Structures are given as structure tokens and as C-alpha cells.
Image 1 (cartoon, rainbow, N blue to C red):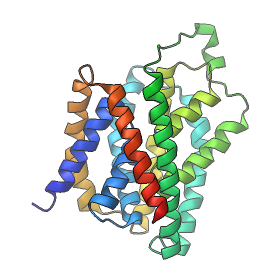
Image 2 (tube, one colour):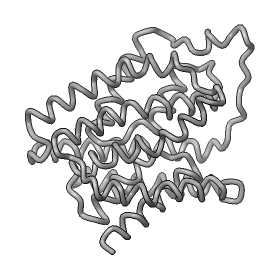
Image 3 (cartoon, rainbow, N blue to C red):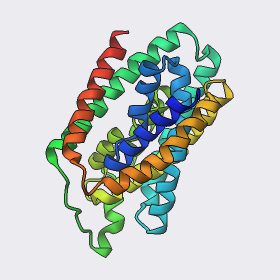
Length: 263
């Protein structure tokens, strides 16, 4: 079956996401490029919609439990979505398959993977952080950034990065949120990061689809594997050596990043 390798790849990435929470984009895009020989622009466009659909379920679950700070999501989206649309317009004008665009994509993807590797390794060394508690009267203060312009600025950077590479809304996004909202408890930071990634990856993915950068049959096969993979991974979390898995992943991502930069 032609789709079987993609189903298995989707299951593998879904299981890792379920185990560790590491963003699917940082894993799936390099796998599509190196393992399957998919062109970078097709790998990025397909993976953006893959990320949007896989994170949608988690967002709905967290929204029902009231863990998402929608003010934080709004502030980041106000910077990231316009930046994504501008990047898509540039890709539309120049053409996603243009050799220079491909070179920019692979180099930027390599740098994004290196940043993700550093953030993943840092979390592996640091270990699980106990959730901080915020008093009822301090919740609004916790969701207030150090300066109103910073979420717009960092959101724009992440929006551009995600649209070009499909990487950046996971470990990098969590690190940015920790810097911008130091009073926000870690579980709420993770919830906000997952929630704002959904509209961003959906907008960027549909934009890529409009310029022919999405392989729909491949996307269907990846999702067919990833959804059960996430379920299996999330159920294995209590027994899995999360710190070891994160450490190995960080080195794998760093290797993929350096290889992409060297292309």
C-alpha cells in the first residue's frame, strides 16, 4: 500500500507528541524531506495542516477545562496571523517552488530546528516544573505581558517562521511565552501555546494549499496514523522515560537542522 509508510510516519510522530508534547512540525517536516524525499515546500505546506488538525483536539479539550488564557492567544495571534498572510503573499508572488525560495526555506527550517533542539534539551535537563499557583486577583496580571508590543513582535516572528518552515509554534513558542508572561503558570502557558498554534497553522496551511503546496492524499495518510498515535502516546506517558526521549529528540533535531543548513 502506497500510503502505509506515511500512516506509519504519522503514527510515530503522533506517539511522540502524545508522550512528550514536542510539536509535530519539528519532527514531521524533516521526516518528509529526508526519509520520503518530499520537496521542502510540499513538506512544509502539508505539515502545517497536519499540525492544525492534530492540535485542534487538544485545544477543544483544554478550552472545556478552562485552562486557556484567550487574552494571551489574542495578543500573539494579532502579530502572528498578519505576518503569516504577508509571508504567504510573498510566496505566492515569487512561487514556492522557486530555487531561491527553497534555499531560504531549508536554511530557515534548519535554524528553527536548532532552536527547537535547544529548547527541548533545556526542558529535558530542567525536568518537570511544578505548576505555580496564581491568586484569583492576580490572574489578569499574570496574563499581562512585560510590554504590550512584545506579543505582537514575537508573534510576528513566530508567524513568519511557522509559515516558512512549519516549525516554531511548539517548543520555541513555549519559551517565548515563558519570557513574555513570567507570572503565568506553566500549564496555562502550554495551553495558550497549543491554542494559538491552531489558527496560525490553519491560516498558513490553507494559504499554502491555495498556492499548491499541500499534498492532500499524503495529509490524509499522515492524519490516519497520527490520531491513534497521539492516543497511544498519551496513555504511555506515565511509564515512558520522558527526559531520555526529550534528550534524544533534541540531538536528532539538531542533526536534522545542521544537515538542512548544509544543503
